[in-house]
Amino acid sequence: MNQLINCSGDTLRIKAPAKINLHLEILGMRSDGFHELAMVMQSIDLSDFIEIKGISTSELIISSNHSGLSLGDDNLIMKAAKLIRTSSGRTDLGASIHLIKNIPIGAGLAGGSTDAAATLVGLNKLWKLNYSLQDLESMSAQLGSDVPFCISGGTQLCFGRGENLEKVDGASARDVMAIVLVKDPLVEVSTPWAYATYKKVNSSKYINDEGDFHVRRQLLRNSNWLNPLNVLSPPPLRNDLQEVVAPITPAVKNSLKFLSSLSGAVSLAMSGSGPSCFAIFPSLDAATSALENKKAELKKYGLDGWCCTFNMKGADCV
Ligand code: C5P
Image (cartoon, rainbow, N blue to C red; front, side, top):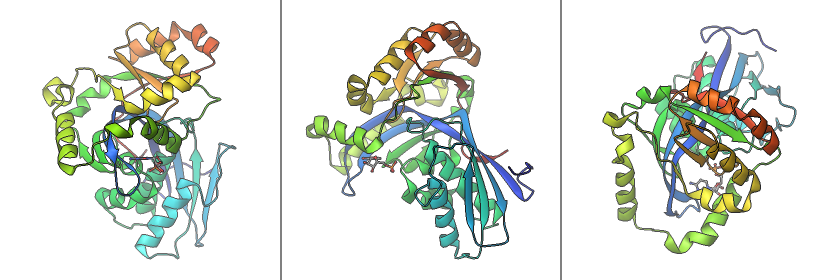
């Protein structure tokens, strides 16, 4: 739709990478009704793109190449645009925003969250609002728990609801690592449902003391595989939601079965609340040939598959 030029022009193109969870540990319940989490999130090189152009009226116009998406007030891009405009007090500003959707929807890959993050980054630049990345992260928490992570992306520890971020030292050396990612195109999992199901089964094990939360966060920070000296040691992977989602979601069971048949996979898990699942490989070549060798099985299971590397950035101009 728009002429594409880089971030110094009047049409901006922002890359919005998906994420996977290398570690998703549920600690307990918070007083705001959300779960207290200890996570490591990782951006991956499977991305949506947002093209943003200034317009002379105060309208916010959203379009997309994906016909199945609502483009109204419930769309996170619209919510993000309204949020940054209201926060800046510049209600006279307008923009035309086009979304090129590549990340599967309802997949546990933060597709909607990364689009919202890219919208904040892009409009901040287009409208010359001069918010810092930290300002955008704080502002974005009200849009969703994963949005703050998606602003800077890379590899980060995420605590609280997911919005308290800590960069992982030395993680950029991990950019050679790659994944095979699979998803049943006919299945979506609702995040509230996944957390509610987990709570039904596990709430008796929840901890609720800030001191105990602190101990668990510290244990994660000190994990061997997060030590900068061990940067190439493969993440062991943990996803507490997988425990409850996988047994009752055939698409997840099939995905994990498929991934475990790939040769050279180091470890595998579900991402977020599912249903997408991934296996880690030491390089993109290893991931690509493992998937290539099992193309027929992938089709038999009815799964879509991608190979991509870890990505060391979040929403960014291209
Ligand atoms: O923040 P977000 O919109 O992604 O959350 C969607 C839902 O997932 C929440 O309404 C809640 O049911 C659940 N959730 C949670 N604890 C979190 C994050 C999400 O219970 N830390």
